Length: 420
Image 1 (cartoon, rainbow, N blue to C red):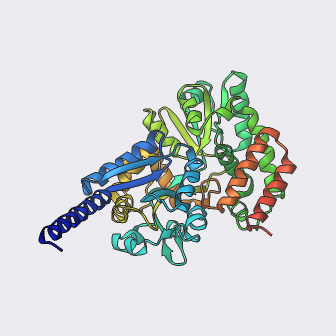
Image 2 (cartoon, helix red, strand yellow):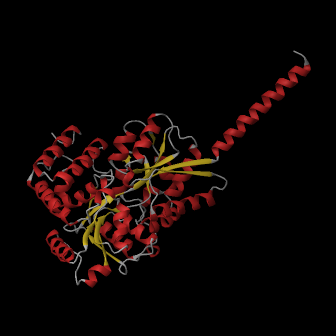
């Protein structure tokens, strides 16, 4: 080989190496976060964590891969396609509990983050209940960034005050209040169930009121029958409640239902406390513009919903993914995120002075109430049951056949191997 040709090949090889290195370095300076946080306070909270990440790790391009649709109904389908196709994001939003473990951990898609959790001190500041629902066989697989409460009644203070009405604490009281409002042409209860899960969410709270915390928990372990009298009572109540919702509920979403209170078009809605984040984003203040109470019949119970982030195997930018988890699990990150999101910290050491009166109330209830899992939001049941549950309840909303719905729910429970 001539000296010139040898030199040319050496230069070419060097340039190719530099090119590849350049691409690799560029790729390493990216971070793709996948979530369904697109509305109001949830988007604001996510952006607040992004800003902290940028300050800690400057020069990293953040790809905010959001898919609209509350509870992740649309995002989960997109994520599943990507994960099964070998193209995971660097980290993704996932509900703690069965959604995490059954869908992603047991199936081998996630890396444990136990060593990171210990190094960051998370195991010392996260409650055992939270650690349990993000762990499997002794390993931790995601970090909880928040705690939401699923069983909350929200109401317009203006509408209830003007009509000399108080927030109902039982369904019997709800029907009295609703009748009074309906007689004046006011929609008592706002609902937007375009994405199915919203109707199932409302039913989840009705189930809790009918069965109590222990009976409700039994639904997910096979100890409480779906064909029993408690579920029958819940469905009968639901059928009656549906007579007080807006006629166009099937065209709306959770946030459009929440907006109905702001617009003066409805008096109440039942939704998780991400609604508080939505109110905040619209300038509404607790105990001034809106009031809050446990969903009727559920005082003393706390339906726990936790959003978490984990580390997929083959994350394209693994080091940046780990840095993201460090931010998501940090006191600074959670104190920036949660007041905007309408949730409380997963950590126990956050400064509650940074939170409004509603969130301080939620934190107090979280500490003393009976904690129960949410089926709709991933912690109580496997995904195959959750999908059937949403479909069955949405059929019920239109047909209102109690016996047929009970049979369908029991069959779904058996097929998901939760019941015998």
